[in-house]
Image: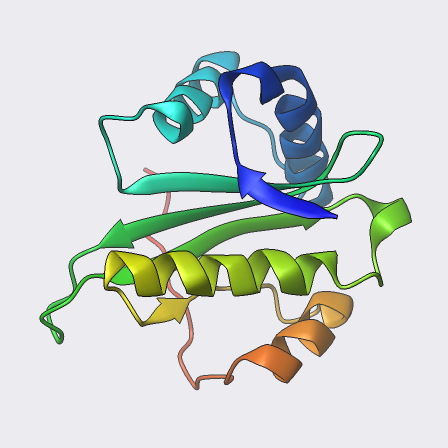
Length: 147
């Protein structure tokens, strides 16, 4: 298993993983958003939005997207791990853990030692992993109502 940066040639495989991830969360995005997101990830001129992929001998089997941003309570930037997905047939093989730990390494290299993410309360398989490698916080997320 290899964890590496996303590259232009990965578009079709990444898109398939991304659509599966969105489907898991019962949502969808316009092609314009999907394409722009991909191109932000592979743009060498920006360092804030990033993506890593897990690759085996057959192809891509996982992805993680993460964003560096300023924080009002810290001098250094922090890292928001926004998306994590491993194909169902590859789950239970520590690929998700490898992807998260790779984000930890990237964050350290960037000078952003704080990494955080959100998940749904009922996502028990993911939370089982998260409980092993991170601390659960007491925060509750709120979002603006659609207008």
